[in-house]
Image (cartoon, rainbow, N blue to C red; front, side, top):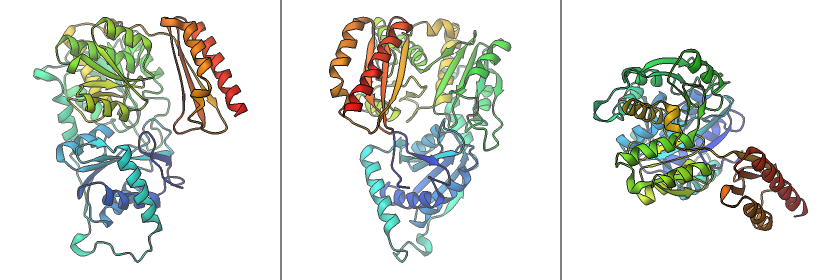
Length: 447
């Protein structure tokens, strides 16, 4: 397999596509390309995690890097320790993917994801590593890296999360159900929420190596919705396998997605005078209802391409403090260097506790327009497909006017063209989405 970086590191079927041999070679390449001799490495709860941690760490150490194995820890926990210790980091996780998949995310010293140029350099170095003769000189003796462990890593991360509630406030009186997706936050999430004073019911925090994300977590909130209503909780929090995203549930069992969560936090920060430049950063997939809600509150919206890395780059460029994605990646730039689902949940609970308002009331700050998505399979990826569809897209935009929105884009990783339509009614959105999907099929069939 040729290892190439996607929108969030590298992923593949563990031990078939993402093999220990590849992980070892990537470790060697990373030690050469990413600055710093020290690394921290964490993982989620997948069965293949220890295998790939061992291989990656061996590759790093063979090039002279010292490695601290953090054990099971959320991705944002690895990023946090990378930031506070000023060392490079790696996370072994495939996020919300099925357990048989796994992946590797890398952080430069300071806890930020590698940029596109760094990933390109790393890919080139990986190719060199894999083609080098076995006799190439390597570090030896005292120059060989050391692999150790840091068993208190989760406690350091937990302390950071507890400090996120400012002015010593507590979450007492809030009844919350947290779904840990049998993933990386299974230990830390219940302990932190309890330490902050919340009354906590825990779901899916018994990982066995194969049950991560299985009918649970942010991609499958049905069990959480039922539990919130049954236990008369005020809120539910659903994390994904590596706990870098959050989906919430209100007291009536309704899902509160990333757009609504960001809207609640943006308005709260704006009202408190803590939203930098009164600006929030979101992606092109963010609902039109969000944009309208922010406009009515005097909050400016900066739009980026899809992916939390694009959001992070825009936050850094503009010096902004809040951004995120509809999928539940939310970034508080003053508190973290990457999306953090548990941190987002804590901030959301703090807003509820401080204002005394239920989540449904807070989330009503925006009204979501019906949104229809179509993934059209094409024979090959064609970056110019949007140009070929210019007439069809323009006609759809005219038909919707100011009451809707159209987005057509080729997938960056798959032979798909993604069509998104928002309109005042679900029927209108579906009709326009179907028309555009048919246009994609027509144009790509004739290409």
